[in-house]
Length: 397
Image 1 (spheres, rainbow, N blue to C red):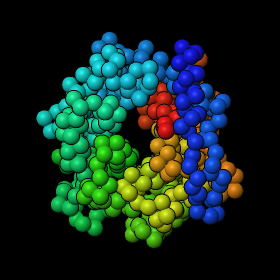
Image 2 (tube, rainbow, N blue to C red; image 1 turned 60 degrees about the vertical axis):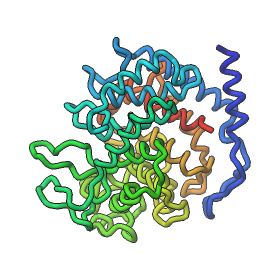
Image 3 (cartoon, one colour; image 1 turned 45 degrees about the vertical axis):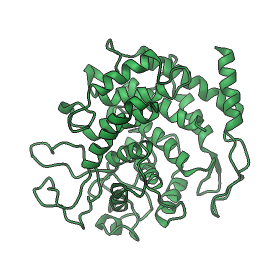
């Protein structure tokens, strides 16, 4: 085992060297440097090894993963499978992994989605399933993934669709381009209009499946992304004109999820800002685009790994592990090894994430949000999957 770990560490150190590029002033940083030092590469590998071991040992009797009482089995199984299939000790041909994919695909519906109909989170479950299938890279999963991608596109809000209040969605609706849960709103026969969290998973699935950023559905998604950014120059929504205009992102054009009752408009916060930032990059928006730069400036201003940034003090631990995995995906897409914050301090974002997760890991290798269970983060399986996936982004080439 030690020889394998030494080989993996040496390989990571060999490939994790960043080419000479530079951020635009005033955020220029030294760029010809190792992405992570040897200490952090080894620490990350140990955390991943122990986290993966915990996940494998936490499988249900049928070889799947879920939350309490079997809840959200397709989504959680897909998330764990993505972590396992990306791990050198497992990969797509390991029996544990093949068994998991068989269970996952048993949830594929006639409409192409991969979900449990009774749970009503069709988009989330299908999107994570697509990410897991794409990570496997196996030809036998290509057809199932293609059907799932087609289903995900069908969930997008388009003009002519009926809103929850029974009104027709028009071209100027703030929800055009959004992605809904794929289920009717409670007590109605109409679809929820959509939100940035659903969009973030949807966009990651499209990216991982290799959908061209120029695809009509992805370009339509940009309309919605504009509508959930606190940037009045590109967002005509009322909240953008009234609020902070800070370049960050909110949950939906009508809801922040971070409100404390004191602010005007809608309050930007970390997990949604990184989700919007990542989604714009995945959609092919240039890094020097004013919308992207505004989001990056928000990231620089609110830099922290101690909390979910800019949530009110009483709730700032909510969604912490969701934030970590979104942070890792977003900054890897951004493509710079160091971020200079608004005070001029340089941050190796990979090393800082490794340190943050090392500080929070339990003795048996798992993570759990012991402070805030909102958004299912009281589940050690879910939070451990988030953490391992984040660390895999950190150590990816």
